[in-house]
Length: 500
Image (cartoon, rainbow, N blue to C red; front, top):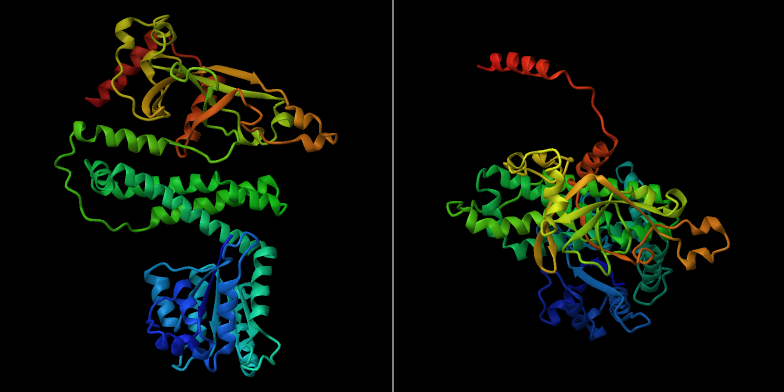
């Protein structure tokens, strides 16, 4: 893993000028390698020189650089990059003394309030009392665990602090500070999730997507696009194994881990939905059905489904028999996640599924069932299919329609009858049975264990919960006895009369 560290210090200005490097810009690792070629360029700033050298030269056991090093010669340059260019760093080393006077307290508060970075104030011992008095002030109290003072080494190397001491402190922070590790992991995971969304939107052609979303209502662009981006980022965070592994490795219980990731991901989603997107108004004059059929199918397939990057079986997974033909039928997992996480303990090895029939399946699976109690003319009366969770009313059985499932690069549509619930028994695998301590056999179900099936995709929120609720309600049933037929007609006629 490469750690990111940023140093804000004007001690590099002379070296930058001698090497004809603009010190008014962000200095990356390549620039800093050039600056540290000659120690004679660093007269009066030997501690800073050695700090850069150690950070730039350190490698791991595989020979890769450990640190991603950046530097700014003044806090104002840092803040410009921080605010305009979204520059972020895990660690910030902040020199207290600048030739040009600055308001250190305001700058520190600005950084701490707007970024989850750990700040090391790097200064001479003569300023220690002053600095400690400031950072112990009430306004810094809530940031105190992210703020520390460290003594700067003098030219002769006689002070207690040193670049090595600082590097050791930072490395210990990565190893031992859970909140820092979680924050660092969450930031990288969120950035990766957003990149995935942007890559997918780029594949769909963003301009066409905006035109399609705003074809009927330009204001709807904001709502639909931000909802979709927010939900996709949330889904990526919830399904990211890196975050859950980090929490598990730090002995965070599964329920607490799930709640924390849900809370954080929901907050990020809400921030996206509440943001203001800036874009040019699109011309929707050419938004005909033919022009936008392909983009509509691609976009809605992306909204409806996602593909987790781990092997865990989840509620909402759409699966196929590994050696079967997914073109004829698939299965939707409806077993709750809390049961899947303790599969053989809670479910005794049984998983609940709903079968999905391809529209290419035999007619007796779809039309034949509807004709059992309905006329042919009646079942043809399908005016529209409005959403994933709304049943196809005219064919009965509370049937649900699952469109835009990408199978082998092509979109396929499927239909499911909630009352056709199936349970499959999955034997506990031999590797778990060999564990003598039975409580240690309590493991989540994965596709390694359920190797006769494979995941095709997973239904995304906010679509999954309504679909599952509809299925459960269809299975369990609710309602009360109907009125006699003549009363039904009489009551309906009375209401119609009021509507004239």
